[in-house]
Image (cartoon, rainbow, N blue to C red; front, side, top):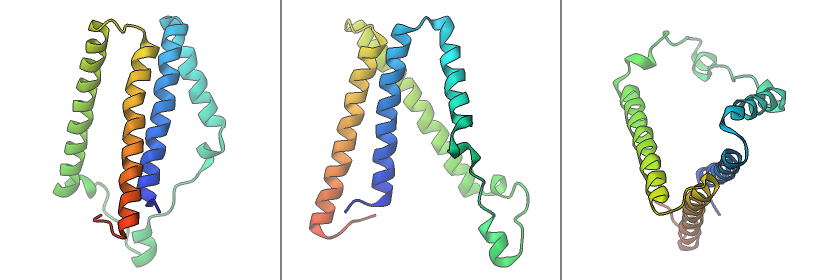
Length: 146
């Protein structure tokens, strides 16, 4: 049986595939100056969805012990700052990798955005399959190291 983290990760990857393919098609079909209207429509659809009405949960620490954490306490926590900086560096490296990958695909003769996105999505689909296969192998072995 797959873990919750595994299912969330695969769900996020599947959402990325759908978004990448959809955006690749839109960029080739809609003039660049009109893409803002697509972005506005997606934002409007989000605001109309039930998910936008969700309210944040209360602070569990406050409910448990009656103490409210100091404002900005996380920003003074070196561990938290290390995670934020590391995440920012990872995201930045992905952005550079995506840019070079698209340029390499264009140099190889693949210039249409929907074709580039389809190839990129194949890689993400392979990632989903690999994650699910490893989870199945761990489940079959009866153990997991995380």
